Amino acid sequence: MRGIAFYFFAFAVLCVTIGMLWGIQMAASGDHALAPAHAHLNLVGWVSMGLFGLYYRLTPTAADAGLAKIHFVLAALGVIVMIPGIVLALSERGEMLAVAGSFLSLASMLIFGLTVLRHGFGARA
Image 1 (cartoon, helix red, strand yellow):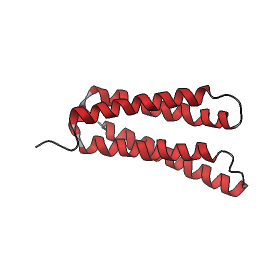
Image 2: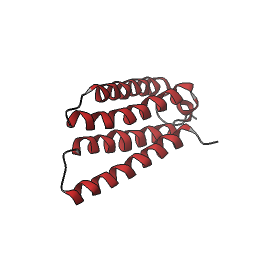
Image 3: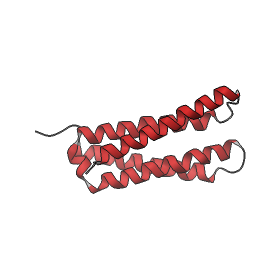
Image 4: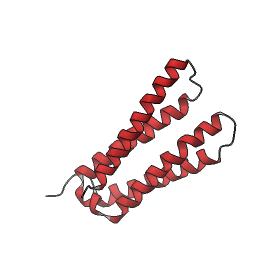
């Protein structure tokens, strides 16, 4: 069975692939109006999710805790809700999704902080 680190990394790779394609599309069209959403997809989706996956790979006690699954769900939902929300906010169609996604991402980071405090970093001997 694949562990939580795999799921974080797989989601990160999906985000960066979409982000790269989006960046190519913006460059080809010359329209960079959605660049802030693209940047958030790459930072929150690729970098944060990848770092979370690395942490869980290096800290198996944290990966085995039930809180890791909740962390993944909140972090993934944060990205899934925030990015379209930023697109809507940039096109002046409302900010509620961006706000909701931001709070989901914040909740996931608070869980991650608690996880780090509980389990430290790295495998224990």
